[in-house]
Image (tube, rainbow, N blue to C red):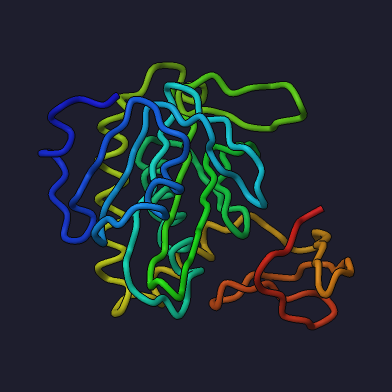
Length: 240
């Protein structure tokens, strides 16, 4: 990763400007801090400061697929970029013969183990949204610290052509973005079909400096979660 022919192989409508790095701090930070055109994709062989949820560090070793893309416009429903990206990831993984599930709100699992994480950073005032995606492909997944993760190569028992995977995935994401206006309902329906069963799971919600615990019932078409108490939760919730 990455071959010189990679850029010419990607013929997208929106995600057309591909920037490749051998090593970078964070692809999300690079796109947020620099004045780059809408549709720019930054991909790296290694990230030194990969981002996870809530400031956590995402280990981004060589062999994984680490990239972000930026859309420069005011986004009324930023969660849709989690939806369209996670569906594209799940569809791509499915094409490799595995059975992915989307763990609400932004992880993708295979065999109950995390294979992909998605991070959205939305700056409404500057009219830009950055979506970061990290996927374990050929990289060694750390086992210490209680990390329950897996790589695609481990699942399939052999090395994966990471460029081929990236081209397939970025084309699906591009198609989902281009069709977002007319096909939003279909994307959400796919997202819900891929959902891992959240019924009965405990959820922690931080609100006003206080922590409250609820029991999940189902995910909705709006990207929220309905609890057994009848409350609709959105935003930053945590499964226990």
